[in-house]
Length: 310
Image (cartoon, rainbow, N blue to C red; front, side, top):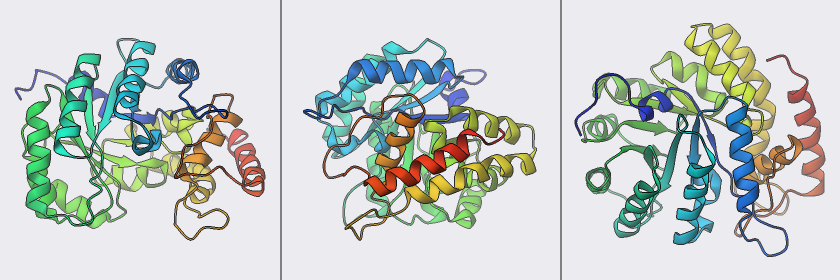
């Protein structure tokens, strides 16, 4: 892909805090409440957010049908002003992901985020081919989402050299591999860290943006953190990051009657949305709602976030 002079809207968007667009399902039949989805994204935009992730993992991507993935993305794009940057998640088989990319581009997204591969057995060269073929399909930039496997530095560097890969969303806590991959890869790819928790350290090592955790429902936190990072005020950035740590740790918990890590991550964010005056809605299987005990804990943590100095 021929790069335009100056940053594109996607490049500008990746160098910012990106909030996920969670999918609000109704309690009665677990159908999507598109009115609430539009209201949520418009409120986040009014709060200053300019980068949005539609149809992402946090949107319960794997619980959405093909048609719902397209509709969620279309409603999100239509609800936002032209200066917003919207990335849409596409994954699954190459055929499925290709169909989604084609549909998303008709909707008018600014970029494609490639959902982490769910295959139990993966090969680096096969994954590179997968990303390469999707990047060829897309007329907009592609952002591979690295999570669920341990890539080598060589793999990550090769990923940066695929035409039309605009950025890489790095969701691992291996900062050494991250730093080495940036040094080994092409310099025109934008690296994005995940959540406020890791943003300061990864920004110091070369990340240029991050995705939201608590900032999905308290956007002023992510915006203030991004401002501090851009100013090089890392002490202030860490202070803001620390405000989010308690709730972010809560998201990694298992909940009741469960042994799987991180099981309450999405319902915890959805409940945060409700506490902040947005519409979170219920979750679809295989997720479950927060227990009453966890809701009470979330309310206490939310109150501390709400009263913190950002």
